[in-house]
Length: 132
Length: 87
Image (cartoon, rainbow over all chains, first blue to last red; front, side, top):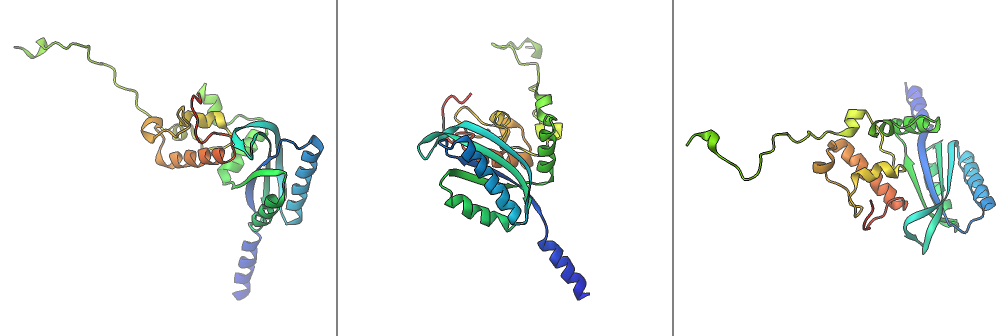
């Protein structure tokens, strides 16, 4: 009985969650630097037992209000799966990185995963069709 | 004086105001995306403040989700915290 419990416990540790990461890089970044930074963090996630689901670089976009006296930023969105421990490690990396102005990691529930999946595959989100 | 002789200065509204509804429940939207700014703008006023449920008609469950999404969008500079003439 105790071994069974142990197995269950071990399984719980292995649970992978779905996360979405949004990063704003500083606008002075070159195209190559942007790509290498993306690769760096995707590799970092892989090393820590996670995996990339989808990467979506939005590119240069104007900000709604200035951050660090800058009015534009380079947006990058990454959907990934990973154990819950990955977030703290990522956060440390982001805070150390001077190219990053702001970052946010969101946990996705099952509806969010479904929504992102539909959106990625070219289907329109439900409300867009019905608002018209 | 008979009742039907009462006269009003302005015509009484005959139509009933449209019943408000929660668009999330009606259309089966389960997830409010903080990245979809155009959609979130339907729930904020010109100053960038959130509309109350009284006006938007959202059910409490989805009003909370919209609020979370708007706050996330503000953090990531997709929506402004304060502004004028947003729309």
